[in-house]
Length: 438
Image (cartoon, rainbow, N blue to C red):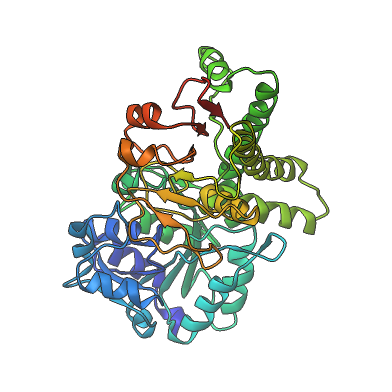
């Protein structure tokens, strides 16, 4: 029966007329902005997330990501619907999967969210639909976890279209301008690619067609590994410069004047977020499967993880020099988020530092972060105090202030003048008798 129906033509026609209903599975840091973008472009949206808290927040027209406004959340109400189950998958023309791809055990890829999603929606799928994976994973994931699980029921490229498209969200920077970022797309077949092209070309100014699913999947990992390796290199240079008693930020300022062949990467307290700490391990794992040891990836990961030890050494050095019992030392951590001006604490270096300090029996720990007021700390973080008001009076109470995340909301002049000792991980203060670079 399906041979008599041109599902490709029907799909493209519905996309061009914006009659196509777009389903987005996973309304987190990737899926939520994407669903809002499609809604802004006039498509009907069906959002799906098993987290009922998120669904309830959307239904009540409230945000759960600081930088996504309630006004934009409101776009997912009315004619658009959001659900905590998958019953409405059958009514979607396009299904975009944006579920997490974390690590498990010894940095092994965890594809359980993708697998559970496909298992949950497979009985709801019907001829003519398009499935696109946006979750970051190693090359071959779309083929192995989606196509191989569905190709007995469907003929891929004729009555079901499958593609992969990498997300390029820079948290706190481009959520509200996603349509201007070139969108990488791919498809299992030419027909799949044609349909996927029509999906994204309606909302993105430029689409970039990869020749295969695997090229598109690999390119996403390469983008993030490029950053991870360069950050690891600069963090290593920070260790070297520190031993030589030279300020790495002054070095970078001079090196950055070269107009060619050099791109500046800044050192920091470690790497955070979902991409840079996670994605390199996906390719490292896959490379080992095909008999290659990706040494740069491994070395960069090890170097970036060593930054926490480097910061710890600075803190312990200060307590020793000032003759403060480290158990009683009052430490203020400025910034929980993994980067400035966001409320995202995924893989945050601050959380890793707190755990390391607590293992040293340092109990007088306090944090201040104006962007994470409603964030729940992970269960493995022991009770830690929260400072809501960063005044000079409050700052003076602490023996050591550690700048982990350089939010714009912090008043740096007050921090510098009121602090007894500062461990500066972001290069915001000039090195002095009270400021230690880390």
